[in-house]
Image (tube, rainbow, N blue to C red):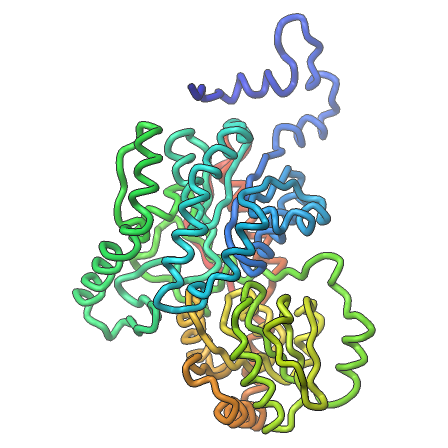
Length: 469
């Protein structure tokens, strides 16, 4: 049976105020007492690839720098990377599970991608995450900061009373009946009748989302004595206490039917520690000729052989230098033309400003880094949030997008030549680069999370805001 701890009981437990014990609080200086009462325990669950985990690491480090204990909860695939930053770590899923997901061809099939994520990522981790929160949360000091697909955190909020902030890295996670952006590959902007949008979302909820997620979720809720829920993406995935979108309003304007407790601090950038400097090999390649075009299918793509085959041929046709970036070199062709090299992890913040353009599927983390670098984009959106991100990027005039079915060397070479020849594009890219202020976005996000601190720590978060980033 779970017993909710009152703030007074928690403080007594923390500082040893029981009869016959020496009070730890009494021996502290005033600054030490203030810090001890302010310090929060932040649990940061996330699911996904490096693009999903890196912003959470950045947020955890920022919270840690403000005097809080921060622990990232994710697949053990990222354990070493996270522990090397000095953050706490709790495993949610095994390396073998992560490798199986990355090898699943459904992951990059737009018609099957959600099924893959629901069955292999979301459902298996509901119970795991709930139990981790139940075990490690002290209700008087803990705030959970979880991605929207971490359904176990939402259940823990309802059952255990833990404070919860939902963090969305991409606008496609926040449904709107006004401007829904691009859903799958359907443009559902303000010109589409509201009634049609409601019908389409009802169909998606009934025959796809709820069909895959609700049986497993509600079975666990029933074990806990919680009532069933339905239409999860129509609102349930958002915490009623605080929702943070780590993207700026100029990228995705706030819609009138988005959650009223939503705040948009802006994009958060992060380079993996230990790889933040450019290696001599990379530096030598960059210095050996004109700025190259970078091609990457993303950190979680392990089965996109066609992407690299067509990319290499496009470089040969266009006569451009290129950097091919992947953690899975088995996707690469066996031979490259002169001026084309393959690399594993690269610190984008250091390398991208020295490139001529970026070709990638449109994951939000890479997109933010590329906007910050001030270079043109060619986006090849496969699935998930990528089609919506690509449409928003193109609307800003920062590049072009090409559907994967049309990603052929001849077309890619032609598009890259057009982008590189556009004399107005560099100035537009630079203007948006100047708008990204990751440190300010992190500070704002941390302040919002601190506003969720259980009594007697801090106050409730303020009314909804969006920053210039």
